[in-house]
Length: 463
Image (cartoon, rainbow, N blue to C red; front, side, top):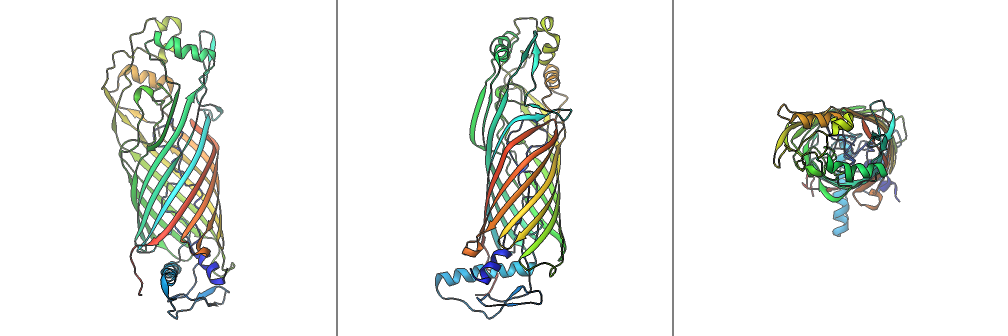
């Protein structure tokens, strides 16, 4: 590897945004699907930037700090390979001029990127309202027996993102998320008796005990990222976005949100807006560290609000055959008579707001990146409209189907640039662990692979 290719790799090495997807949608608690913890979708290329200009050549000078400086002699090798190198090197040169670093950096004007995230996750535990760890669904007593439903699940997602540098300080992005999941109940003997025998007697259908789905659409979102301030040490960016009502909402008669089955929502399923405010601080001024090293401290604050939507009630209820209140008053409050709800009846649902914060430390060593982060996400309690059926509202309150939720997590990420091979791409791997929470799911075995490539769309340099 030549000094030149090593330097090209360090210039375009991946910005470790320790915390890519978030793990919960505003207003929903029954969400086993990873969607992004860091809410900034513009985790673009950082760069070690030194003075220089013109076309790149295989010979390099150094400045007073020992960093390579490109010569502007306009050399261009013949043939397709020479043209390809020429284009790549001009993109790198433009990145050098912009002094890009951290999570606030944008794509150079006329350059596009395509990113694929693949994540896997599992869940069978949660934090309760006292911040204590327990099963996803807490056991309850019925007629002196402890009923355990033993809900667990695994899944993940594929997220595809396209970004384009409109101008040097402004990017546009479009993100297309998909989810896969496998969720099931594995009740104990008392739980099986309640689900299969008692539920029909109290007017409820026998509960579905498993659900599996793949390539389920999530909330498509799009927005702009604006690097509104940047100097050699400090940078600020703002990313407003809008979420489209594209997420797959489950059949209400099988929905875990309504206590009817194990099927989960893959997103909000309605219109929503949000923004992320990001900050980067270069710990050491340029020249204090070797030219192939950089250390960046980053913080991102995110906010989202989901608008009111109409949802369909579960409706497969029958008239109870027994007086449940006479047998177990507490159980009766959780499962009131809902036989009056008909197919097609709807109610108003307000997912509400969510907010998040992540702080991370990024270390870049030539073609390698390493990042450590800590963050939290909070979602407000979802609300039912005044038109909601009183008995259905009673059930939702008794089963605590919605509520305020908070999750705290730590993350580690590593990356490598493929620029030394003249492949304009980077590969990153991320691991996350939930360490604290309130009314929130504990995600275990969270891993994510990210592959990101860059290519010019507009030829903004001279031939």
